[in-house]
Image (cartoon, rainbow, N blue to C red):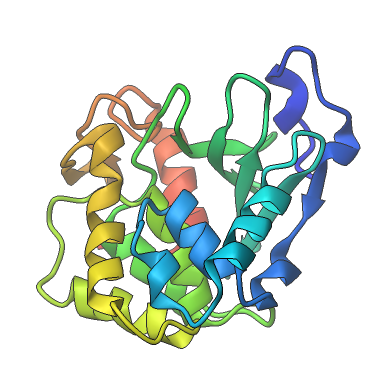
Length: 232
């Protein structure tokens, strides 16, 4: 899966290293593990009725150097957002990649840890991605999977409540507001508070670390926006 993604690694991992782990989202321990590791919410471990030891086991399974889990969010445009658990020795982290017919290969949206880049989405785009729906994932799963790629200074007043609702939907029973607050603030450790604006008809991040900044071509920015869905 994700042809071309592994080409930049040296030594290049075997293509079989990547595997579709989307079905793992049905495992109870995956959500505290994912929200803690990728989302940066340390309170997620306490929010679910799950033994912390089980969360540790899940984190170990997610972090095997010879097996890189990939979680996929299908988009209405026919494109896909992939969250790759990048278990590369010496440069581990998480990559958000956009793939589909509009692009020659996987397009990076955000990279967490290592040589970080981002953000990959604004708040309106996150909501659009979550609301599109698909047969494989529900609204809450979609929102929480993509949320760590968010970076937007203009969050609505109800943002924390929306995220807390998603956390509840995937099984959290306590400290949901705490987890929501941490998730919404966590990405600032990489790229700080970022603004988005319309530039030549394309949503553009005004930060210096984003793949979707003004330095990217207008054609590239428009193609990404079209793949993600309507933006306003």
